[in-house]
Image 1 (tube, rainbow, N blue to C red):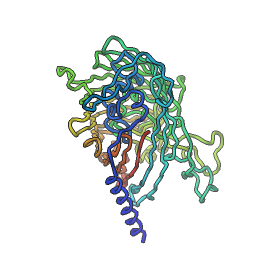
Image 2 (cartoon, one colour):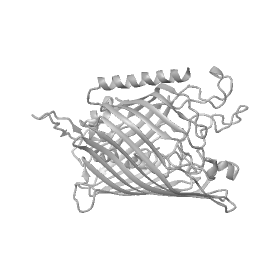
Image 3 (tube, one colour):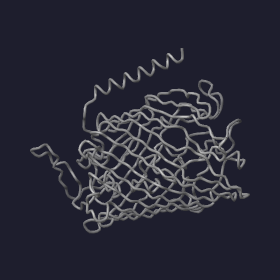
Image 4 (cartoon, one colour):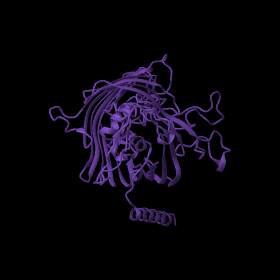
Length: 496
């Protein structure tokens, strides 16, 4: 009977998606960036699922603090259309942005269906639907000709508060999501920028994101990245602060230095982290061929080092709701929201069996990454974003233990006619070792990490996606590995 019900549910879902496909039409989106600049959404990014993948215009627009790049004339506005129906944008003069309707936008995500299977047992997880999975509200854009702001406040329907006792609705046990949600201030960045000659600018910013969010090399989401994920997206409850100085020189060279209070606090006295980036836009000797809207290629070297860093070998602790004494049966690790520290790197599933605690506190950490990014916009009917990255991290711990990991990965999102897309990623751990305080070294075991998604974009501001990925957690002892797990989802994501 259960399998029959599941089959009917899948038939209904496929029927719905088929009906949506037949109904689809191409339409123009009008989020805040389009209203501010007069450009359509496709000018700044290839796609936006699950996060934007930027064209050259979009990347420089953000680096300058949401000002049109390579312009000292002021605000770019739509000036109408020529005889062929093409846009004829025009530059205005100096301005002060006061019309809030130009700068407010929102993004809504609805999980049509989410499911998967449990590693080890292969048991199917409950299939769930969450019509109000997330609502993000943004007040973003230029404040003056030299100052710009990015903010996000989110309703976290995808990250429910958890029970603190066993007397909650429907008899939920401690630590189980209650389906009660809240709002969270997620991201903030204030940027001041100034042109230096015709093809260069400098910018300074203060915000609560990891600094690679400023130059947007934080994306694509699943690329190799051995440090904290920059833009929260799930209501990151830990508050941090970053100061960043960025320069873009001769229309091709990026330099950046940032100081960050840490992965999980605003305290400078207990250590801090440093971020540096050096990047080149284009291919030397080819002029602007690989440095334009239609074909943008970046070569990037980055490093993060410091002592206020989350551990790469164990999952991050969640936030603490009981600040003094927790109720019986409650620990400070099973409350509130899941934090994103270490999300982009691979924790060890059997660390507790080796060190007895399952946790390590970082004494010092050094991470690096070399990556290549290409954004191709509307080469005929074809658009794509791809990146190849290799990175590594070394950490020493207060206990005397240490760990090293190196990983290589590739990710690509391709669109036909900006409407039908497919995304793939594959990451391979080159080596991953953990050395105990006694000096015993373990080499971690892990299969290749991969995932895929199908994308349908009926309008520039709407995405319908179906995602699938195996659940893979590296282990220090191969016999501890639990395979067979997976995660899948079908969701609708749109901005307005």
